[in-house]
Structures are given as C-alpha cells and as structure tokens.
Image 1: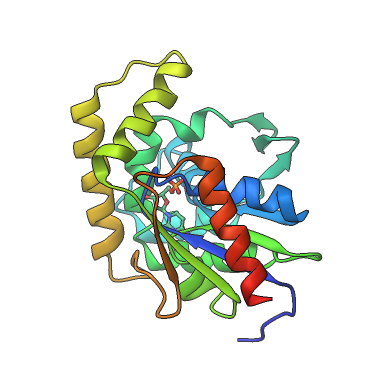
Image 2: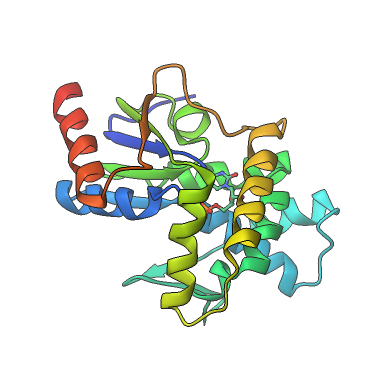
Length: 221
Ligand code: DC
C-alpha cells in the first residue's frame, strides 16, 4: 500500500465513546479535515435498506457500498440528493450497520473512499479500524474507551435532546451487543493498534479529552 505524506490522527473506539465529538474538535483546532468513517457504513446501510436489500446478501451490500456517492455539505449529509443527516443516526440504522460493517466486501468497497479523505493540511479520522487498517501509517493513533454505562448515558442524553424516546437499560444492552459484534467480527475487528495510545474517557470532560489528544499530537510531530 502506498502511503501519502498527509498527517493523519486516527481515533478509534467503541460506539458512543465520544470519538466523533472529540475528532471534530481536534480537527477544528488544527485546521484539519475530519473523516467520520462510521457515517459511510451508516450510509451504505441506509442505501441498502432503502433498496430493499437483505442484510444477508453480502454481494448486493458490497455493490451498494461501491456505488456510494455521498455529499458532505456544511454539516449535512446528502445521499442521492436527499438529506439523510438524521436518518443515518436512527437506532434501527445503527443496529443494522454493525451487521453490514462485518461484511468484508463492504469494508473493501469503502476503503478507497476513506483513503481519499486524507488531504492537506491533514486529517482526523474516527472509526474502528482507522489505526489498524485504513491509516496504519498515522503518526498518532488514539484508542478511546469509556464504560458501557457511561456511553449509554451519553447516548441517552443525546436522544432526549433530539426529542426522541430512550430507555437507558435497552441502550446499554444494545451498545454492548454492537461492541461485541464489532470486536468479534473476522474482518477489521475493533481493537487498538499495537502502537495506539489508550484513553479511558469515563471520568473526563470533552475539553480535557481534546486537550490530551492535542498534547499527544504536539509530542509526536
Ligand atoms: O461510529 P459509528 O457508531 O457511527 O459506527 C457505526 C457502525 O459502523 C458501528 O457498528 C461500527 C461500524 N464501523 C466500522 O465497522 N468501521 C469503521 N471504521 C467505522 C464504523
């Protein structure tokens, strides 16, 4: 694999560990681009659901992922001209996505799309396999964790803020099931890269976590 010289900060970790918020803030602080790789898996899943494709049909899922042409525009995500920013975050899409993301062909199909996100002056990439598979050359790899309960509570507050119904126990169980699927799948499972720095954010605030990542970035440049 040919590696570019664009600096990349890879931030991986389980669902609702706060990666998205942190990665977005770090990107803003450094003036870097931001890749939300989970959004690509969510988009592929939504496209497949809309097309009536079975989640067991690996070939059709791979084809759908390979044709994905999302447009990221001022914080909105458009798919075939439709604003799907909210739709890809629904609990139904979240649950289906961890199944779609386990399909090797889907991961292959989305690989180049992710690599192309590395543009000057730099990229902060958030996902599950940014440090292990997609950007193994990244000079800084962070593996962010938080207990399932803390993560479920964060997701619970997010859902309530959006005016959606939520049940904390169900969210915790759902997160644990999704983590298990992400960790146990054969293709690019969720795990820290050998050279990743571990960060447990259970008892940390957002600013503190952002500060830590920026401090690590200063150290490794
Ligand atoms: O980060 P997220 O919750 O938006 O991710 C949605 C799903 O996609 C989740 O089940 C894990 C999967 N995913 C993945 O397998 N690899 C990535 N790089 C990013 C997300």
